[in-house]
Length: 108
Image 1 (cartoon, one colour):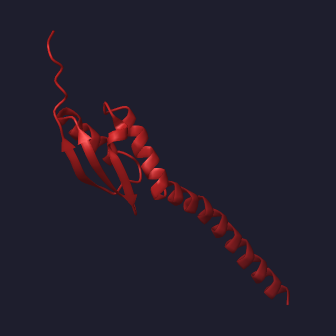
Image 2 (cartoon, helix red, strand yellow; image 1 turned 30 degrees about the vertical axis):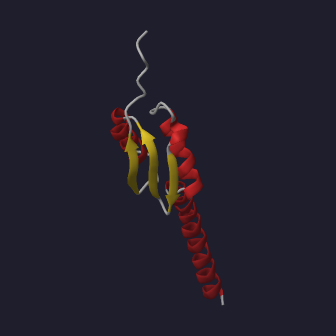
């Protein structure tokens, strides 16, 4: 009887130990793989620092795969793609960006 109680207590302690060790790992994993809305916001934040008109770029994210479309200056395209790939949680980027030349202003 005492052996059974000691064994039961040991099993319970071991289970509690392993359960407590796995919980932080699950939280880290959830943080490492944010949901698509969070990724979209992170991408938009990154774009605000890079492009002249971040609102012109349409961003969609599905299961960590980002798709970018819309007009972008030729010199900004590579920076945009690199910045989006550097956003934690983005697994791939589909480039549908359309390079456009800046509007020419007439000389006066």
